[in-house]
Length: 601
Ligand SMILES: Nc1ncnc2c1ncn2[C@@H]1O[C@H](COP(=O)(O)OP(=O)(O)OP(=O)(O)O)[C@@H](O)[C@H]1O
Ligand SMILES: [Mg+2]
Image (tube, rainbow, N blue to C red; front, side, top):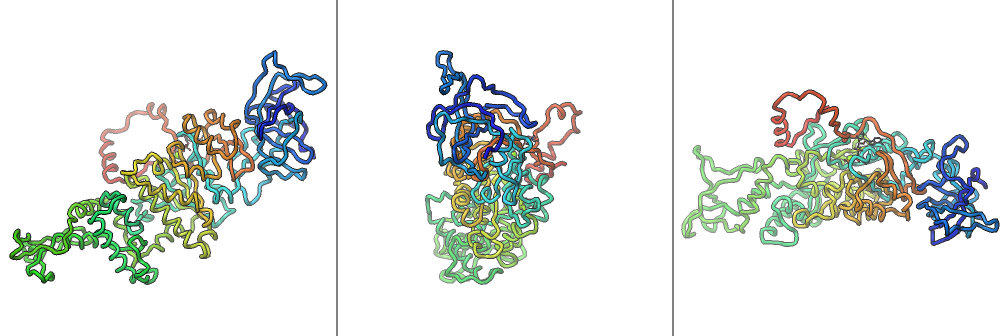
């Protein structure tokens, strides 16, 4: 079947694996040409060629072009047609005579096989007709009428990465993809966006529920009780998990005990104590843990061997100063006698917890960590883990935005790690439950991933909890219906295992050599022809390759409205305006101190 009018551009002169050298006869004029009313640039780098072989058409991308030295002219066939120009072509796929395209080539062309420019008809055959498995995310750069579609199943289950320099259009692309996924064709679509800069509220507000740590209605809680002991202790008492001190043991035992005590009271249903471990996601009261350890450490007693008669200090009214668990006020005791021979006697349970107690109290009293340490009604009894998951992904909207813009930077790794782990576990354990797991796949978008997935993190200070959790999504998520979409401007700083698991790469403009190298290495096929363009792409132009597309292509992505709130500042416009009134910095500082931002429209 001849798919389109033949536009000969050369002959195959050399074959090295999937790479061909094609020589262009002198009578062939490369460059712009009108064919069927559409303008083509014949022989341009990055454009497609078609090579008919007896049972199929092979398709390739022009990856290099050049001209021979005068003394090295190539004779083409018996007619002695000469060719000065040559091009290198990377084969990417083939279509059979029924017009069905598939990636990869099973047949090789013979030497001297003619090579044609691929025209719009060929391209639509390659990209297929719009169908329910595809969403459109733009048009092809070379064929503006040809929609660029991506396969939703592969995009979600085989993971993806959207990479490009700052301002190249990544967030716009994410917003566009998420809008296309939630446009109506998939009413049960389920997407969670990890949004470190609070960019998506505006762009996705009409189809998303946005949680943030200071929101009055949709408050984002990442409860401490969902963390393992190692995770919590890293944050709470600066513990490095490589070591286990006596203090660690005391804290771990106390948390374990509290989890066991709560196991029978859970809203979700009573849980056998034998199933509880120090790391089980069972709510408990951390304030009580702190208070009890404080009591064990500092309490004094009026009678030796009767540790019920506590030597509390008395206030002026004579009431014992018992402190307060909820308000994190320590109890006060009479000072123990130095000799220990007369009352008050010191606590027999003290174990050198002073340093840990101080650190715990500082954290518990710091309101910027309330979203972690003071999770409202989520105490396991009034509301449990199931309610939390339900609030995140059980609401009617298809998208959940977790806005971390007001989250203290030092806990981003811990918090993103915990959230990702919770979502993964929910999908994992829900895999046989209707409407969960594989029965309602979840796509998690990791925006600004370099902020918490950096490979250069110093393990001493940032333990890489997000990296572990996100790696798990990218390595095992496919089986449980969890897909990851990584978005970053610094691919060279990201954990390479995660990028290597991204089945689809959408690369926007990127100029840094190191970052380009990572993208080139990550692209699933040998694509030098396309990756050469990476630094020359326009804003919103991208190269997309991998599982979600039939063949790699250069596409143009439209600007979405309303846009993510990440648009460039406009110095000329802003600097031309009269100055605003004085004293704005008072407001700045109050936002800064309270970590609450009231975004101006
Ligand atoms: N497809 C597009 N067409 C035209 N302009 C675009 C397109 N995408 C983005 N822009 C413009 O480029 C600017 C940056 O876009 P965007 O925020 O999406 O970039 P980004 O890659 O996410 O940047 P960063 O890494 O800093 O988050 C915006 O001002 C936006 O208006
Ligand atoms: Mg962005």
